[in-house]
Image (cartoon, rainbow, N blue to C red; front, side, top):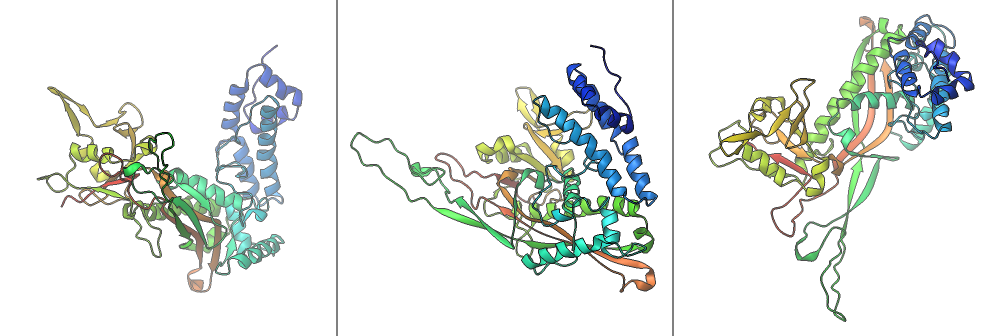
Length: 457
Protein backbone atom coordinates (compact mmCIF):
# COMPACT_ATOMS: atom_id res chain seq x y z
CA UNK A 1 0.00 0.00 0.00
CA UNK A 2 1.39 3.39 -1.02
CA UNK A 3 2.28 5.83 1.72
CA UNK A 4 0.00 8.85 2.09
CA UNK A 5 1.31 12.40 1.90
CA UNK A 6 0.84 13.82 5.38
CA UNK A 7 -0.72 17.33 5.28
CA UNK A 8 1.08 20.20 7.01
CA UNK A 9 -1.75 22.69 7.57
CA UNK A 10 -4.94 22.55 9.61
CA UNK A 11 -7.12 22.91 6.49
CA UNK A 12 -5.41 20.06 4.65
CA UNK A 13 -5.56 17.90 7.76
CA UNK A 14 -9.26 18.50 8.27
CA UNK A 15 -9.93 17.61 4.62
CA UNK A 16 -8.05 14.32 5.04
CA UNK A 17 -9.82 13.38 8.26
CA UNK A 18 -13.24 14.06 6.74
CA UNK A 19 -12.70 10.93 4.63
CA UNK A 20 -12.93 7.86 6.94
CA UNK A 21 -11.16 5.66 4.36
CA UNK A 22 -8.13 7.95 4.44
CA UNK A 23 -8.13 7.93 8.25
CA UNK A 24 -8.09 4.13 8.23
CA UNK A 25 -5.20 4.12 5.77
CA UNK A 26 -3.12 6.22 8.18
CA UNK A 27 -3.32 3.39 10.72
CA UNK A 28 -2.83 0.63 8.16
CA UNK A 29 0.27 2.32 6.72
CA UNK A 30 1.89 2.76 10.12
CA UNK A 31 1.88 6.55 9.66
CA UNK A 32 0.10 7.40 12.94
CA UNK A 33 3.27 8.74 14.60
CA UNK A 34 4.08 10.92 11.58
CA UNK A 35 0.49 12.17 11.41
CA UNK A 36 0.43 12.98 15.15
CA UNK A 37 3.62 15.06 14.89
CA UNK A 38 2.18 16.98 11.92
CA UNK A 39 -1.03 17.50 13.89
CA UNK A 40 0.92 18.95 16.82
CA UNK A 41 2.74 21.37 14.51
CA UNK A 42 -0.49 22.44 12.82
CA UNK A 43 -2.18 23.14 16.15
CA UNK A 44 0.78 25.06 17.59
CA UNK A 45 -0.09 28.63 18.56
CA UNK A 46 1.98 29.85 15.62
CA UNK A 47 0.29 27.40 13.20
CA UNK A 48 -2.51 27.80 10.70
CA UNK A 49 -5.27 26.64 13.03
CA UNK A 50 -4.38 29.13 15.77
CA UNK A 51 -4.08 31.88 13.13
CA UNK A 52 -7.59 31.09 11.93
CA UNK A 53 -8.97 31.32 15.46
CA UNK A 54 -7.00 34.47 16.29
CA UNK A 55 -7.94 36.23 13.03
CA UNK A 56 -11.60 35.39 13.54
CA UNK A 57 -11.64 36.89 17.03
CA UNK A 58 -9.57 39.92 16.11
CA UNK A 59 -11.81 40.76 13.16
CA UNK A 60 -14.87 40.47 15.38
CA UNK A 61 -16.48 37.90 13.08
CA UNK A 62 -19.89 36.68 14.12
CA UNK A 63 -19.72 33.10 15.27
CA UNK A 64 -15.99 33.14 16.05
CA UNK A 65 -16.66 30.74 18.90
CA UNK A 66 -18.29 28.36 16.44
CA UNK A 67 -15.24 28.53 14.15
CA UNK A 68 -12.90 27.84 17.06
CA UNK A 69 -14.87 24.79 18.16
CA UNK A 70 -15.36 23.52 14.62
CA UNK A 71 -11.66 23.59 13.76
CA UNK A 72 -10.28 22.21 17.03
CA UNK A 73 -13.09 19.85 17.99
CA UNK A 74 -13.47 18.25 14.53
CA UNK A 75 -9.81 17.30 14.38
CA UNK A 76 -9.74 16.07 17.98
CA UNK A 77 -12.99 14.07 17.78
CA UNK A 78 -12.09 12.47 14.44
CA UNK A 79 -8.62 11.57 15.65
CA UNK A 80 -9.94 10.14 18.91
CA UNK A 81 -12.56 8.06 17.05
CA UNK A 82 -9.95 6.77 14.63
CA UNK A 83 -7.69 5.70 17.49
CA UNK A 84 -10.57 4.14 19.44
CA UNK A 85 -11.73 2.15 16.40
CA UNK A 86 -8.29 0.56 16.37
CA UNK A 87 -8.27 -0.25 20.07
CA UNK A 88 -6.33 2.80 21.29
CA UNK A 89 -7.78 5.09 23.96
CA UNK A 90 -5.77 8.25 24.56
CA UNK A 91 -6.34 11.69 26.10
CA UNK A 92 -6.95 14.63 23.73
CA UNK A 93 -3.97 15.85 21.72
CA UNK A 94 -2.77 19.42 21.53
CA UNK A 95 -1.53 22.33 23.60
CA UNK A 96 -3.90 23.10 26.54
CA UNK A 97 -3.57 26.80 25.69
CA UNK A 98 -5.01 26.32 22.18
CA UNK A 99 -7.13 23.18 22.50
CA UNK A 100 -10.62 23.01 23.96
CA UNK A 101 -10.18 22.24 27.66
CA UNK A 102 -13.14 19.87 27.87
CA UNK A 103 -11.91 16.38 28.65
CA UNK A 104 -8.59 17.61 30.05
CA UNK A 105 -7.09 16.32 33.28
CA UNK A 106 -8.25 19.32 35.34
CA UNK A 107 -11.65 19.74 33.71
CA UNK A 108 -14.68 18.80 35.84
CA UNK A 109 -17.94 18.39 33.87
CA UNK A 110 -20.04 18.89 37.02
CA UNK A 111 -18.22 22.02 38.25
CA UNK A 112 -20.34 25.10 38.90
CA UNK A 113 -19.12 26.93 35.78
CA UNK A 114 -19.59 23.98 33.37
CA UNK A 115 -23.03 25.15 32.06
CA UNK A 116 -21.26 28.18 30.50
CA UNK A 117 -18.92 26.02 28.41
CA UNK A 118 -19.06 26.56 24.65
CA UNK A 119 -20.65 30.00 24.91
CA UNK A 120 -17.45 32.09 24.61
CA UNK A 121 -14.40 32.11 22.34
CA UNK A 122 -11.95 32.68 25.20
CA UNK A 123 -11.68 34.21 28.66
CA UNK A 124 -11.25 37.69 27.18
CA UNK A 125 -14.50 37.30 25.22
CA UNK A 126 -16.25 36.14 28.41
CA UNK A 127 -14.93 39.06 30.48
CA UNK A 128 -16.07 41.65 27.93
CA UNK A 129 -19.59 40.18 27.87
CA UNK A 130 -19.86 39.66 31.63
CA UNK A 131 -18.92 43.26 32.41
CA UNK A 132 -20.79 45.06 29.66
CA UNK A 133 -17.75 46.03 27.59
CA UNK A 134 -19.33 45.03 24.26
CA UNK A 135 -20.73 47.63 21.83
CA UNK A 136 -24.28 46.34 22.22
CA UNK A 137 -26.11 44.10 24.74
CA UNK A 138 -25.08 40.48 24.37
CA UNK A 139 -27.73 37.73 24.72
CA UNK A 140 -25.15 35.46 26.38
CA UNK A 141 -25.34 37.67 29.48
CA UNK A 142 -28.66 36.01 30.41
CA UNK A 143 -26.93 32.64 30.62
CA UNK A 144 -24.20 34.09 32.86
CA UNK A 145 -26.81 35.49 35.25
CA UNK A 146 -28.74 32.19 35.28
CA UNK A 147 -25.65 30.15 36.19
CA UNK A 148 -24.51 32.67 38.81
CA UNK A 149 -27.93 32.70 40.50
CA UNK A 150 -27.90 28.89 40.67
CA UNK A 151 -24.44 28.89 42.22
CA UNK A 152 -25.32 31.64 44.71
CA UNK A 153 -28.11 29.45 46.06
CA UNK A 154 -25.46 26.97 47.28
CA UNK A 155 -22.76 29.53 48.09
CA UNK A 156 -24.45 32.76 49.26
CA UNK A 157 -21.08 34.36 49.95
CA UNK A 158 -20.07 34.19 46.29
CA UNK A 159 -19.79 37.40 44.30
CA UNK A 160 -19.24 38.43 40.70
CA UNK A 161 -19.82 35.98 37.85
CA UNK A 162 -18.54 32.42 37.48
CA UNK A 163 -15.82 31.71 34.93
CA UNK A 164 -16.78 28.91 32.50
CA UNK A 165 -15.26 25.59 33.57
CA UNK A 166 -13.34 25.16 30.31
CA UNK A 167 -11.42 28.39 31.06
CA UNK A 168 -11.00 27.65 34.78
CA UNK A 169 -9.50 24.26 33.92
CA UNK A 170 -7.11 25.86 31.40
CA UNK A 171 -5.96 28.33 34.09
CA UNK A 172 -5.16 25.41 36.37
CA UNK A 173 -3.52 23.39 33.58
CA UNK A 174 -1.19 26.33 32.94
CA UNK A 175 -0.64 26.81 36.66
CA UNK A 176 0.53 23.22 37.20
CA UNK A 177 3.58 23.78 35.02
CA UNK A 178 5.40 25.71 37.79
CA UNK A 179 3.45 24.66 40.88
CA UNK A 180 5.31 22.71 43.55
CA UNK A 181 2.55 21.25 45.72
CA UNK A 182 -0.74 21.02 43.77
CA UNK A 183 0.39 18.59 41.03
CA UNK A 184 1.75 16.21 43.70
CA UNK A 185 -0.96 16.59 46.36
CA UNK A 186 -4.28 14.81 46.92
CA UNK A 187 -6.88 17.23 45.52
CA UNK A 188 -10.47 16.87 46.76
CA UNK A 189 -13.47 18.60 45.18
CA UNK A 190 -15.49 20.49 47.78
CA UNK A 191 -19.20 20.82 47.04
CA UNK A 192 -19.81 22.95 50.11
CA UNK A 193 -17.97 25.26 52.47
CA UNK A 194 -16.27 22.40 54.30
CA UNK A 195 -15.56 18.69 54.11
CA UNK A 196 -14.27 16.19 56.70
CA UNK A 197 -12.06 13.31 55.59
CA UNK A 198 -11.25 10.29 57.80
CA UNK A 199 -7.82 8.91 58.53
CA UNK A 200 -6.52 6.03 60.64
CA UNK A 201 -5.02 7.55 63.79
CA UNK A 202 -2.04 5.25 64.32
CA UNK A 203 1.13 6.87 65.60
CA UNK A 204 3.28 3.86 66.51
CA UNK A 205 4.18 0.36 65.33
CA UNK A 206 5.61 -0.58 68.72
CA UNK A 207 3.75 -3.36 70.52
CA UNK A 208 2.51 -4.99 67.30
CA UNK A 209 0.00 -2.29 66.32
CA UNK A 210 0.15 -1.41 62.65
CA UNK A 211 -1.52 0.82 60.09
CA UNK A 212 -5.27 0.31 60.27
CA UNK A 213 -5.32 0.09 64.04
CA UNK A 214 -5.12 -3.73 64.04
CA UNK A 215 -2.74 -5.66 66.26
CA UNK A 216 -0.92 -8.80 65.14
CA UNK A 217 0.99 -11.42 67.16
CA UNK A 218 2.07 -15.05 66.90
CA UNK A 219 -0.48 -17.14 68.83
CA UNK A 220 -0.50 -20.80 69.86
CA UNK A 221 -3.38 -23.04 68.85
CA UNK A 222 -6.35 -22.38 71.12
CA UNK A 223 -4.52 -19.32 72.38
CA UNK A 224 -6.14 -15.96 73.03
CA UNK A 225 -6.13 -13.41 70.20
CA UNK A 226 -5.39 -9.94 71.50
CA UNK A 227 -7.38 -7.22 69.80
CA UNK A 228 -6.68 -3.49 69.77
CA UNK A 229 -9.18 -0.72 69.39
CA UNK A 230 -8.87 0.97 66.00
CA UNK A 231 -8.73 4.75 66.27
CA UNK A 232 -9.92 7.04 63.52
CA UNK A 233 -9.57 10.78 63.14
CA UNK A 234 -11.00 13.39 60.82
CA UNK A 235 -9.26 16.12 58.86
CA UNK A 236 -11.53 19.06 58.15
CA UNK A 237 -11.01 21.25 55.10
CA UNK A 238 -12.73 24.64 55.14
CA UNK A 239 -12.75 26.72 51.97
CA UNK A 240 -10.51 29.76 52.42
CA UNK A 241 -11.07 32.86 50.30
CA UNK A 242 -8.25 33.63 47.86
CA UNK A 243 -8.62 36.90 46.00
CA UNK A 244 -6.69 38.65 43.25
CA UNK A 245 -7.13 42.18 41.95
CA UNK A 246 -5.83 44.50 39.25
CA UNK A 247 -6.58 47.85 37.63
CA UNK A 248 -7.04 47.33 33.92
CA UNK A 249 -6.86 50.12 31.31
CA UNK A 250 -10.19 50.39 29.53
CA UNK A 251 -8.44 50.14 26.16
CA UNK A 252 -7.59 46.53 27.03
CA UNK A 253 -11.27 45.63 27.42
CA UNK A 254 -11.82 46.52 23.77
CA UNK A 255 -9.25 43.96 22.59
CA UNK A 256 -10.54 40.48 23.47
CA UNK A 257 -7.42 38.56 22.32
CA UNK A 258 -5.08 40.87 24.25
CA UNK A 259 -7.31 40.74 27.34
CA UNK A 260 -7.40 36.95 27.12
CA UNK A 261 -3.59 36.72 26.78
CA UNK A 262 -3.08 38.93 29.82
CA UNK A 263 -5.60 37.02 31.96
CA UNK A 264 -4.21 33.62 30.93
CA UNK A 265 -0.72 34.73 31.92
CA UNK A 266 -1.33 36.69 35.12
CA UNK A 267 -4.07 34.59 36.72
CA UNK A 268 -2.20 31.23 36.70
CA UNK A 269 1.02 32.86 37.89
CA UNK A 270 -0.69 34.67 40.76
CA UNK A 271 -2.74 31.67 41.90
CA UNK A 272 0.24 29.37 41.57
CA UNK A 273 2.55 31.52 43.69
CA UNK A 274 0.02 32.35 46.41
CA UNK A 275 -1.20 28.76 46.78
CA UNK A 276 2.30 27.28 46.89
CA UNK A 277 3.49 29.69 49.59
CA UNK A 278 0.48 28.77 51.75
CA UNK A 279 0.71 25.01 51.10
CA UNK A 280 4.40 25.08 52.04
CA UNK A 281 4.60 27.61 54.89
CA UNK A 282 1.01 28.61 55.79
CA UNK A 283 0.17 28.87 59.48
CA UNK A 284 -3.54 27.99 59.29
CA UNK A 285 -6.43 30.14 60.45
CA UNK A 286 -7.42 32.33 57.53
CA UNK A 287 -4.74 30.58 55.44
CA UNK A 288 -4.19 26.92 54.60
CA UNK A 289 -1.89 24.99 56.93
CA UNK A 290 1.43 24.36 55.19
CA UNK A 291 3.59 21.24 55.42
CA UNK A 292 6.33 23.07 57.31
CA UNK A 293 3.88 23.82 60.13
CA UNK A 294 2.29 20.37 60.14
CA UNK A 295 2.06 18.57 63.51
CA UNK A 296 3.62 15.62 61.67
CA UNK A 297 6.72 17.46 60.43
CA UNK A 298 10.14 16.24 61.62
CA UNK A 299 12.81 18.92 62.06
CA UNK A 300 16.45 17.84 61.80
CA UNK A 301 18.62 19.92 64.11
CA UNK A 302 22.01 21.26 63.05
CA UNK A 303 25.22 19.39 63.82
CA UNK A 304 27.27 20.28 66.90
CA UNK A 305 29.52 23.20 66.00
CA UNK A 306 27.95 23.62 62.55
CA UNK A 307 28.53 27.21 61.33
CA UNK A 308 25.58 29.48 60.64
CA UNK A 309 24.02 29.49 57.17
CA UNK A 310 25.62 26.23 56.09
CA UNK A 311 24.44 22.82 54.93
CA UNK A 312 26.61 19.77 55.62
CA UNK A 313 26.24 16.28 54.25
CA UNK A 314 25.13 14.94 57.64
CA UNK A 315 22.05 17.23 57.44
CA UNK A 316 20.99 15.69 54.14
CA UNK A 317 21.62 12.08 55.16
CA UNK A 318 19.69 12.48 58.41
CA UNK A 319 16.74 14.07 56.59
CA UNK A 320 16.64 11.18 54.15
CA UNK A 321 16.81 8.63 56.97
CA UNK A 322 13.73 10.14 58.66
CA UNK A 323 11.51 10.02 55.58
CA UNK A 324 8.69 7.47 55.84
CA UNK A 325 10.06 4.51 53.83
CA UNK A 326 6.88 4.08 51.81
CA UNK A 327 7.17 7.74 50.80
CA UNK A 328 10.73 7.66 49.49
CA UNK A 329 9.62 6.79 45.95
CA UNK A 330 7.25 9.78 45.85
CA UNK A 331 9.37 12.29 47.73
CA UNK A 332 10.95 15.47 46.36
CA UNK A 333 13.49 17.88 47.81
CA UNK A 334 12.29 21.50 47.92
CA UNK A 335 14.93 24.14 48.62
CA UNK A 336 15.52 27.86 48.34
CA UNK A 337 17.90 28.86 45.49
CA UNK A 338 20.30 30.32 48.07
CA UNK A 339 21.10 26.75 49.15
CA UNK A 340 22.23 25.71 45.65
CA UNK A 341 25.98 26.55 45.90
CA UNK A 342 26.35 24.48 49.04
CA UNK A 343 24.23 21.57 47.82
CA UNK A 344 26.34 21.25 44.67
CA UNK A 345 29.55 20.88 46.70
CA UNK A 346 28.33 18.22 49.14
CA UNK A 347 29.96 14.79 48.86
CA UNK A 348 30.16 11.48 50.70
CA UNK A 349 33.70 10.29 51.44
CA UNK A 350 34.58 6.94 49.86
CA UNK A 351 38.11 5.87 50.75
CA UNK A 352 40.48 8.51 49.43
CA UNK A 353 37.82 9.85 47.04
CA UNK A 354 34.15 10.69 47.30
CA UNK A 355 30.74 10.69 45.63
CA UNK A 356 28.56 13.77 45.07
CA UNK A 357 25.27 13.99 46.95
CA UNK A 358 23.57 16.28 44.40
CA UNK A 359 23.71 15.58 40.68
CA UNK A 360 22.96 17.78 37.68
CA UNK A 361 23.09 17.09 33.94
CA UNK A 362 25.31 19.93 32.76
CA UNK A 363 25.06 18.92 29.11
CA UNK A 364 21.33 19.69 28.81
CA UNK A 365 18.65 21.61 30.63
CA UNK A 366 19.66 21.15 34.28
CA UNK A 367 17.84 18.21 35.88
CA UNK A 368 18.53 18.41 39.58
CA UNK A 369 18.50 15.38 41.88
CA UNK A 370 19.86 14.58 45.31
CA UNK A 371 20.25 11.02 46.61
CA UNK A 372 18.18 9.94 43.64
CA UNK A 373 15.18 12.20 44.38
CA UNK A 374 14.21 15.32 42.36
CA UNK A 375 15.41 18.67 43.69
CA UNK A 376 13.12 21.69 43.20
CA UNK A 377 14.52 25.18 43.75
CA UNK A 378 11.94 27.82 44.65
CA UNK A 379 11.75 31.17 46.40
CA UNK A 380 8.57 29.99 48.14
CA UNK A 381 10.49 28.49 51.09
CA UNK A 382 12.78 30.34 53.57
CA UNK A 383 16.30 31.41 52.59
CA UNK A 384 19.56 29.69 53.54
CA UNK A 385 20.04 29.28 57.28
CA UNK A 386 16.36 29.55 58.23
CA UNK A 387 14.28 26.53 59.25
CA UNK A 388 12.74 24.90 56.17
CA UNK A 389 15.21 26.31 53.65
CA UNK A 390 15.42 22.70 52.45
CA UNK A 391 13.00 19.85 53.07
CA UNK A 392 12.07 16.39 51.81
CA UNK A 393 8.33 15.91 51.22
CA UNK A 394 5.80 13.37 50.01
CA UNK A 395 2.97 15.69 49.01
CA UNK A 396 0.64 12.72 48.52
CA UNK A 397 0.00 13.13 52.26
CA UNK A 398 -1.14 16.73 51.71
CA UNK A 399 -4.84 17.42 51.08
CA UNK A 400 -6.14 20.28 48.93
CA UNK A 401 -9.84 21.07 49.07
CA UNK A 402 -11.01 22.98 46.00
CA UNK A 403 -14.46 24.42 45.31
CA UNK A 404 -13.48 24.31 41.61
CA UNK A 405 -15.18 27.61 40.90
CA UNK A 406 -13.55 30.94 40.06
CA UNK A 407 -15.62 34.11 40.01
CA UNK A 408 -14.79 37.49 38.50
CA UNK A 409 -16.09 40.91 39.42
CA UNK A 410 -15.35 44.36 38.05
CA UNK A 411 -15.99 47.99 38.95
CA UNK A 412 -15.29 51.08 36.87
CA UNK A 413 -16.56 53.60 39.39
CA UNK A 414 -13.60 54.12 41.72
CA UNK A 415 -11.16 54.55 38.77
CA UNK A 416 -13.56 56.32 36.43
CA UNK A 417 -11.40 59.46 36.05
CA UNK A 418 -8.35 57.29 35.32
CA UNK A 419 -10.15 55.43 32.51
CA UNK A 420 -9.51 52.15 34.32
CA UNK A 421 -11.62 49.27 35.53
CA UNK A 422 -10.85 47.35 38.70
CA UNK A 423 -10.97 43.58 38.26
CA UNK A 424 -11.24 41.03 41.06
CA UNK A 425 -10.89 37.24 41.07
CA UNK A 426 -12.24 35.09 43.91
CA UNK A 427 -11.69 31.37 44.49
CA UNK A 428 -12.08 29.19 47.56
CA UNK A 429 -9.40 26.65 48.44
CA UNK A 430 -7.99 25.00 51.57
CA UNK A 431 -5.03 22.77 52.24
CA UNK A 432 -3.63 20.85 55.19
CA UNK A 433 -1.62 17.71 55.90
CA UNK A 434 -3.59 14.47 55.98
CA UNK A 435 -1.33 12.73 58.48
CA UNK A 436 -1.50 14.35 61.91
CA UNK A 437 1.63 13.09 63.65
CA UNK A 438 4.97 11.46 62.97
CA UNK A 439 5.08 7.66 63.15
CA UNK A 440 7.12 5.79 65.75
CA UNK A 441 8.39 2.62 64.04
CA UNK A 442 8.91 -0.72 65.77
CA UNK A 443 12.65 -0.02 65.77
CA UNK A 444 14.40 3.28 65.23
CA UNK A 445 13.64 6.99 65.17
CA UNK A 446 10.31 8.58 64.29
CA UNK A 447 9.40 8.87 60.60
CA UNK A 448 7.26 11.27 58.58
CA UNK A 449 6.39 12.19 54.98
CA UNK A 450 7.47 15.76 55.85
CA UNK A 451 11.09 16.35 56.96
CA UNK A 452 12.79 19.76 57.10
CA UNK A 453 16.18 21.09 58.18
CA UNK A 454 16.12 23.30 61.28
CA UNK A 455 17.62 26.78 61.62
CA UNK A 456 21.41 27.23 61.57
CA UNK A 457 21.76 30.70 63.07
